[in-house]
Image (cartoon, rainbow, N blue to C red; front, side, top):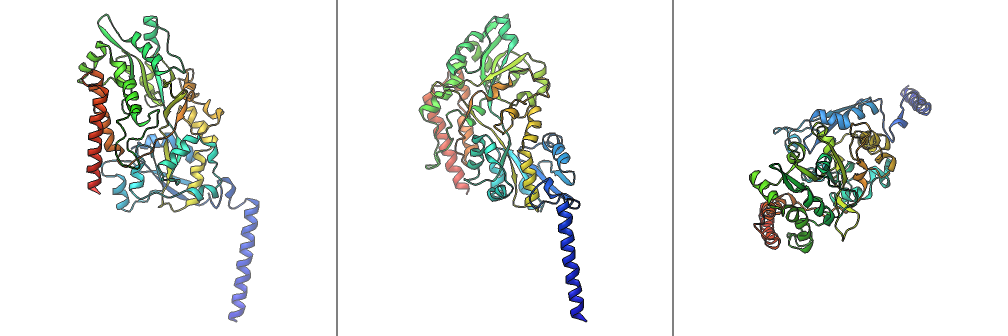
Length: 440
C-alpha cells in the first residue's frame, strides 16, 4: 500500500512539473522574460535603498523610485531616509537589511568600510550587462574604488564646466567665452571682466575650490599609493594651484572681495545671487539641483578650460555608483533592477531631466535637458572635452583634502607664494596621514 502511495505521489509531482514547465513556456504563469534571468516578477519582493549622499525620500523617488515602480510593478522599493540616528553603521548593527547602496565617488569608501561590498562581476556577466555601453572612464572609476573588482556600477555622472553670466558680457561689450578655451585664454578674458563699475566689484573667474582638486585634470592623486605620502609638492600641482587660485585673483578688487567675504573665496552666491561673477567653473548639474536660482539668471555654459599640455581634456568624472550589497535576498532580481538603471530607456529618461547619463550613446547624450526649461542652453558643452582618467584613491583622501584646501585663500590674497604653500600643505598632509595610521 505504501509503495502505491509513493508511486502515485511521484506521478502527481511529475505532472505538476510538466504543467508548470508548459505554463512557463506559454508565458501564462511566470513572465520571467520581462525582467530577466531567474526572476519571478509575480512574487512580491521588497528591496531597500540607502543613499551615502543623504538624499531625501523625495529626491530618491525623483531619481529612481518612480521609474523603478513603473518598470517593476510587483516589487516594493523602500528608501531608508538618512538622519543622525540612522547612519549606515547604526542600521547594520540594528539588523536592518540594505539591498542597494548608492553614493558619489567621494562618499563611496563609506560603503566599503561598512563591509557591505559584493563583487558583482560574475552576476553582471550572468545577466549579460553590457559594460561596453558605458563611458569607459566611468567603468574604470568603478574598478578604481573597488580594488579592481566591481562593487558598483555608475548610474549617473558629473563633470566640471564653465557657467557664464551672459548679461555681464553684454553689459561691458566683451565677447562671451567659447567651447575649447585654454586656461590662458580664459584668464585673459577674466582680466577684462574683473572691474569696479559704479561702485560694484565684478569678478572675472571663480572655480569651485574643492571640486577642482578632487577632479583635477592631471589625474593627480592626493596620496601616493606606494609611499602613502602626500603628492602635492610637485610642478603639476603648482600649475593647477596657480591656474585655479593665484592668477584669477591678481586684481586688487578681487582681493578686496575675498576680504569682504571674511577671508573666504567667492562661490555660488556671487554667481547666482549677487550676480557679480562673470564665469564660474563648477559641477555640470548646477541647473538641475538649483533650477529655481538659475531661472533668475541670464546664463549659458561652455566647456571647462584646458591646459595646453592636456588638449581637449576636461575634469575627471564625479560618478554616482549603485551597488548591490552582500545582504540582498535576491541577487538576480537586484541585478535586473540595476541593469535597468543603466539601460538606454532609463538613462534617456534621466538625461531629459538634466541628469548626466553614463552611456556613451550620442542619442542618449543629446537628450540632456530636453524636458527642462534649459533645453536651449549649450548643454552639449558638457561632452565637449574628454574626461580625465580617474586618479587613484586612498582611505586618507578626506583627511588630506583639508590640508590641500587650507592655503587657497592666502594664495589668492598674495600672502604666500605657491612653492611655500605647497610645502606647508605637504607637511600638514603627511602629519595627518601619520595620525590616521595610528588610529588603526
